[in-house]
Length: 247
Figure 1 (cartoon, rainbow, N blue to C red):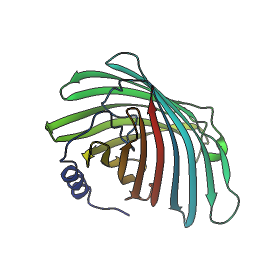
Figure 2: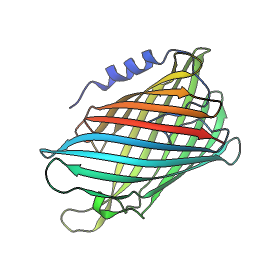
Figure 3: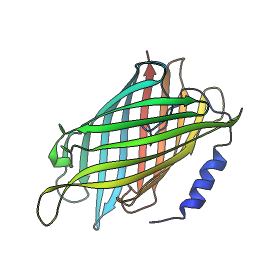
């Protein structure tokens, strides 16, 4: 399913014209964010998605944890791992650990916030769920406050995704151009909306989402996001729930 990306981008920017809160993490582009966190954080999450591929419906559940640490006010290190369960509507499913994702980013400028980063996956996950791959990539991101009530963000990156050549069986790498955009929309001092769009070139992946970030305390947040797939490589629907806390 494909929609006009220019229309979607315009819609996201219009929705984003509101006062932005500090320390609001993105959802889809959690790691590809120009913002440098001010404190150590942990983010525990549950994610459910429904996909259709080659006339087969798949359900995927993901229980994960992410962590980030500010090495300095301009340098941040992050990591994450998940337990993933994949179940077709017919037949047996598979489950196991994902690869460990590690990433880092450096902030070059603070007004607007401009950062660049890199990531790689350590191939320790289960091959039964399509893991055990050494992927890596590079990206740049920006957060810009257009005026006092407005903040928007965007990112662009190039991913190298490990796969197997269908003819030779040899390991090969696919290049994916990744484009992300969105905004932070504050409804109150505690509640913010986070609309986003992510587009990946070679994987036919486009996902439009809107998340809610609710501050329970000075450091704890409940977060939820609903995503809708716009292309064949994305899930038809995605539901994300998480709790993020700082230390």
